[in-house]
Length: 386
Ligand SMILES: Cc1cc2nc3c(=O)[nH]c(=O)nc-3n(C[C@H](O)[C@H](O)[C@H](O)COP(=O)(O)OP(=O)(O)OC[C@H]3O[C@@H](n4cnc5c(N)ncnc54)[C@H](O)[C@@H]3O)c2cc1C
Image (cartoon, rainbow, N blue to C red):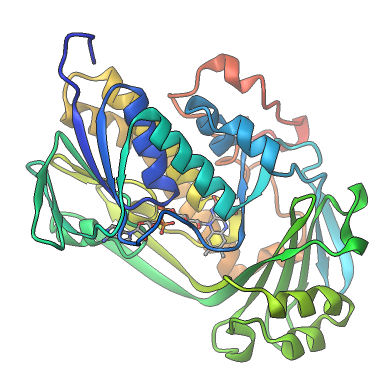
């Protein structure tokens, strides 16, 4: 337990993504000195949207970022799924979740990390970690710390340097092009404050996800099998998408002009255990998952905040890491498996997707969240998994 007399413990963190910024903020707020290394020359995220479910919002409350997410994001009215043009379900009305652009969420987390006193160093690439407590950088430096955190994403160099960890990797047949576009006049107003998920499965799976991100922005995700090379291109191929979804042509044309989007393949990586000595993994470095349930970053945020909490609760780093992994492991493994199942079966196309069982992770409340906060995010009876 940190006491006012105790010298600050020090953490070196690799990767200023959602997970790295969150864990750095949570540790700095608890009196740790934190240095966060980002390989890029600036701290930023690319142009797409992201959904923060209740589990993530509660953890963002703990570090003081949730209110800004609510202010800058959108709480969708409901989630409607269409298969071959016909509506097959309308779900989660009233569920407490928010959508926000990735660059905005990222900048809110970076502001919080700096305000808490974390130092962010750009152009600083990690190449590995020494489990005795040191981060190794590409420039040859060895930075000693009480805790080294690999939050360097799915391709984590920190993780790959820790030989004692096992990795189960899987790649899937689907991928997604993601872009942000200005919201056209005809899609403004409350009637459009909902998520629209359009699927076709023949001759191959193609899906357009329409997600409002704020009064002026829309996030559009285009999912297709990666072997469908034209449908996997950035900039978005207007012809191939409009052929399949003619009624969405105006939106697809705007998406075709969008800059700063990205294509990603689906992948899962289950790492066991999440730590070796004084080196620990947080976020996609530990648990990259298919995006079907929109939980990857959320789980990294939950785990990052609870890691800082566990370190506060326990005398030694080793004890804290063991307790933390026991608390978070099952939930994380479950959501990875469920997301993979949804991606492989494409069951989302059939509607009635957001069952209480699939919302279990969204409903998860980590040990770092004081009970009073939960009341801010009441879950409608129909969506409860308890
Ligand atoms: C199509 C799609 C949709 C998604 N939608 C959602 C959603 O709605 N909700 C949700 O919660 N999640 C979603 N996700 C998942 C989410 O994007 C990831 O889980 C999240 O970005 C992982 O955050 P991270 O900080 O662990 O890693 P990253 O975002 O990958 O960040 C890692 C950071 O580390 C830096 N870095 C990498 N290597 C090094 C190094 N060697 N040294 C220093 N720095 C390094 C990188 O530059 C980057 O800044 C989605 C994913 C996909 C593919």
